[in-house]
Amino acid sequence: MASLFFTTPQFSHFRSAKPIKSLNSNEPIHLIQLSGSTANHQTPYKSYFHAISSLCKHGQIQQAVDFLTEMDSRNLPAGPEIYGELLQGCVYERDLSTGQQIHAQVLKNGRAIYGYAIRHDLGSRISISTALVDMYTKCGCLSQAKMVFDSITSNKLPVYNAMTSAYAIHGQAGEALVVFRNLEEASVEPDGITFTSVLSSCTHSGLVNEGLEIFVDMVSKHHFSPSMEHYGCLVSLLSRSGRLDEAFRLILTMPYELDAQIIGSLLAKCRERDEIELVEQLSKYLLELELDNLGNYVAISNAYVVAGRWEEVSEIRDLMKEKGLKKSPGCSWIQIGEKLHSFIAGDGSHPSTEEIQATLALLGTDMNSSA
Image: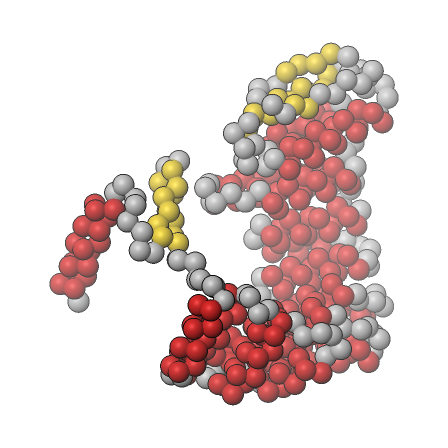
């Protein structure tokens, strides 16, 4: 059983808290809450930091906030590293079994932490401000992320990056470009993260000309060497807009070794647009890079299926058999109460299979009769 014990000279008395359970484990974590003198703030501060950090890592955000409240009552101000842990905890507390209820709790705790930061005049610290923008962004509160961003008076790159990424995540490419232009006007030099966010936002919003202009400026104006990730964004930008030949030429001329992921994404776009000649060229490169990757064979086979090239489909499948590559059967699942029920294609081992099949048959009959 894991425990957190703090045996410092300044905290000679302890009061036990109730055991709590980790989201990832059934093992209880017994917390020994701190009590006693606070004459020396250095060691108690570290103890609080480790307690809060551990709670956040185990998804126990509310208990971590309780420790923050206790620090506040002891006149022991929390620093940026503690707020960073709490805000990251708010971002990562996503649990499929509790869904939106956990999401709502994350939002509530995030706002509480923001209140503490403002009261202790930590809002202007770059690390806290950036973490706040990130937290509100990933919890779906873009307007509040913008509110934090607008309240920052310092022109620091991490804050601009956080807001640019926020708009990219929420599909607001126009706003991301505005932040990028404001960054340039403030004479703040962008970095790789900045360009990735802006290019990604242009890609997902179909702003081809703007994305190409950003890429050109990255090299000619900012003298920045594009990374493989930046080339990947540009390939995606071109392929999504139907400029498949240009995307293919870019892959062949970029100053990096061929990348299977980028080639695979372009192959998928070629399949959608029935560009079978490009599919054949990309397939050769893809299989050279990852000869034993089952997913590549499936992607190529699917492309030939769409084009009606059944002879090639048969060749690919024979090649898969020769290499002993088998596609894993599809699986779906549903949670009812505390139990997770999984269903695999062609598998009838579930104890309620007959009842499920009978219900499906009834639903099918009802749908046919109402059609």
